[in-house]
Structure formats: structure tokens, C-alpha cells
Image 1 (spheres, rainbow, N blue to C red):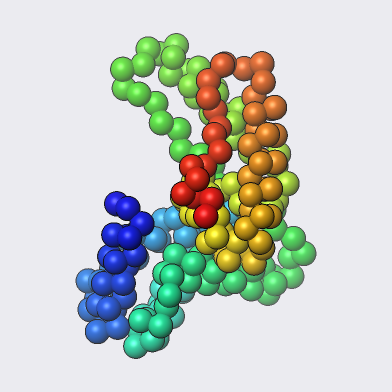
Image 2: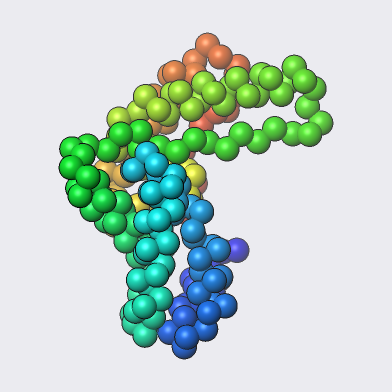
Length: 200
């Protein structure tokens, strides 16, 4: 689905929500809930609490559904709401900083791989996860939003309240550090910079 079609579909979903259509609300939840929970978990380091935060954000959205059409960008709206709720939770728990702000990468192993190839693939992804885990907190967060959630640089900048240039710089740092960490391992294209349409 291209960006224009996605924006049109999201607008139609918001129209349904504003008209008290529970099926539209369920569709929006199914589209975003899992990714938002991953995002919140990266901040809170707790899956259970992350799910509660996401559920609460959607409950508030439903309660204020009459204003749904005022939302300009649903992705930015939801990620920002989850970020703020997650940080508010940390503040209430008197934690001074976020730890482990990155969720694990899903490992995709082809069914036709040999047992030895599968073992090598798993080991490679473990090394990638380890390299990502060693990134500075902001790098981890930016890398996750761009690479795992597929958000554009401008949306990541708005969600994290930083400039697009900062997002770009953090991605360059993340990719360079991961590539350097993987040097000497299997010669596979581990990490690539996002396509240009993600940058702007």
C-alpha cells in the first residue's frame, strides 16, 4: 500500500470512529496496537505495562472519538501519545532514566534452509541484536522507529521532538556502529540505510 492509499484508509477509519463505528476502532487497534506495544516496551522494559499503556491510549481515543477527524496524522498521534504515557508512567515510578530502549528483532528463517544454515542465521541475528543493544539510547529509539516500524524521518522527528537532521545523523551513527560490530562475521548485507522515501 502506497502512502496516499494508506493516508486515505486511515482517514476513512477516523471517519468511522467519529461516527461511533466500533469496527473502525477495532481496525485501527489491529493496525497499530502491536507496534505501539513494542515501542512502549522499549521505553518501559515491561511488556505487561506497555500493553496497558497502549490500551489506555486507545480507550482515551474512543472516549474522545468525536474529535477523531481533528487528527492530522494518526501514526504520529498514536506514537506521541504512547511515548508521553510511557514517560509519565516512568515519572510516577520515580525512575530517572529509560533502560533497554529497544525491542528485539524478529528472526526470519527460511523453511528450506539446512539445519546448519538455520543455526548460522540465528547466530547472526543474535550478533545483530547485541550490536543494536550497545547503541546509545537515542540511536536505539530512532533506529527502531525507522527500521522496525517503517516510519518516515519527519514522523520520527515529530514523535521524539527532534529535528529531521538529528534523525538522519542518528541513523548514520546506528548503521555505522552496527556494521563495524558485525565486521569479521558472515559477509551478509546486515543493515542498509532506509530508502529515500523514508527520509522525508
